[in-house]
Length: 375
Image (tube, rainbow, N blue to C red):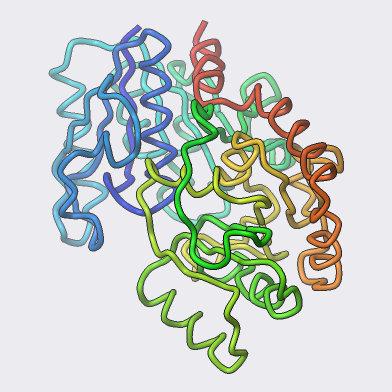
């Protein structure tokens, strides 16, 4: 099958959406399909020097990336959509269009391409052109399915009268299988301590303050934070300076291809999401009700004990058997959970269940589900 993936993500970038897009294209191709990723010809302020995109994300070069016109002017989404339309108009017809950029997916439907659209947030809440285009797309005879990342998000669409049950499919996010659990990296601090890790962004809603508080109360463990911009790291280093902590370490951003080394090196992995989570730390939309964080699946894939915020949407994947779930802002709960997992037997029990449950959340299996929707 020939698949064109239409995205508006900046490739490469540090955004989680870019990781998702690249991993899905790789997985679709890994299932024996010919895949072309369409992305805007724009640059990320941090990663414009990256030469090998595939190596950056840790994927094989089994799909093509084609950058299309995206002028830095007002109405750039319209011009990008026009570029997509022209590309598809003169390209030999593909079997399927898949993507997260609503304008581009609608343009494909106008040309008679079958379209599967993936939504990570309730598009109907955005009172703009995207909502109008979405309504037009789902009425098209070429519209195949709406893919959403959680059961909660599916119910939000159903409750608001968008499509019927058969036209919406839940496909949680995913992670790669870990090929070598011994692929580790030397961590800062005392090698003999319990090593507690966090990998991800450092902005508002990600619970970095919770990690700092735990570090201040549990002095016989080391806390390792991987990710963040220089500005973010500077903020948190200044935040902890008065506390004079010597058991918390920052590593900064590392490419997606390298995060596996860090996850392998930790004893416990933390996902301290707040009860309100935004994208980029400044978005008005609270995603905590319907999100499906890639981080959770990456943690599970590394066969480690996980402590996570007890949010209803995370319980679609996590449970008391494959993780320790705690109230997001209750520091006592977090420290108690860490103390409990100082016991190796307890850690292994949770980790073993997490890796078993992860089996159905690989990128390859996620891609297989997408392909099945078109059959």
